[in-house]
Amino acid sequence: MNQVQKGSLFVISGPSGVGKGTLVNLLRAKCPEIALSTSVTTRKPRPGEINGTHYFFIEKEVFLYRLKHGDFLEWNEFAKNYYGTDRNIVETAVQQGHNLLLEIDVKGALQVKEKKPEAILIFIEPPSLEELKARLFKRKTESEREIQERLSIVKSEIGKKHLFDYSIVNDDLELAFSELENIIMNQINRTEIYKK
Ligand code: ADP
Ligand code: 5GP
Image 1 (cartoon, protein in one colour):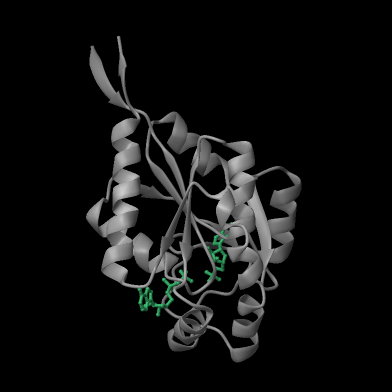
Image 2 (cartoon, protein in one colour):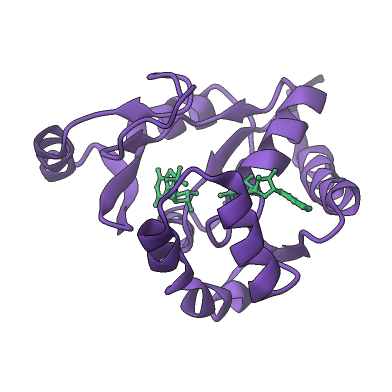
């Protein structure tokens, strides 16, 4: 009997500025064997963001063309930009038995659950709206108008957390990371299967 690892699909979601990227970076540093799907977006790159690493940055016309051709497993228009997950990246990783992580918004996460019910959805929650706002302002990657746009949908996003498999409050970063790591490692260990 050979022991093989069946790949799991993890979706990390939650409001903008809650700390998804921070937690995912910590996870990838500790568990480099977990792959991260690179999303496609029409948003302009922030200083330091690299095409093909942080996102595939494309024009709106190209995004809409690819959407029409069914290239995306899920997609959403978020704060006036389009974001999508390349279906091929997910299918290839799953077929090859890799553990794959998607870091996407709440609407996108729920689309993934519909299409792939086996996906593990993890909601990252802020300790309070005030703290979330403070984090977005501190990050300084969006204008005040863009921050307000992101904050305007937070309540409706938090209202959907019951549709997720797990929810983690990102107050103390170390604690939140440890909860995330436990959920992910338990799932990976649980999906070990035996084949003849
Ligand atoms: P997201 O990817 O969800 O938009 P980020 O990971 O970019 O959020 O985090 C937003 C800001 O909040 C960053 O400046 C980050 O350093 C900070 N941050 C993340 N987690 C915490 C935490 N637990 N406590 C305080 N600040 C945090
Ligand atoms: P940002 O502009 O801050 O990088 O991302 C804005 C929001 O879009 C975040 O909540 C982020 O998780 C989400 N996002 C990133 N990639 C995707 C994707 O492929 N699909 C969806 N639906 N959302 C995404």
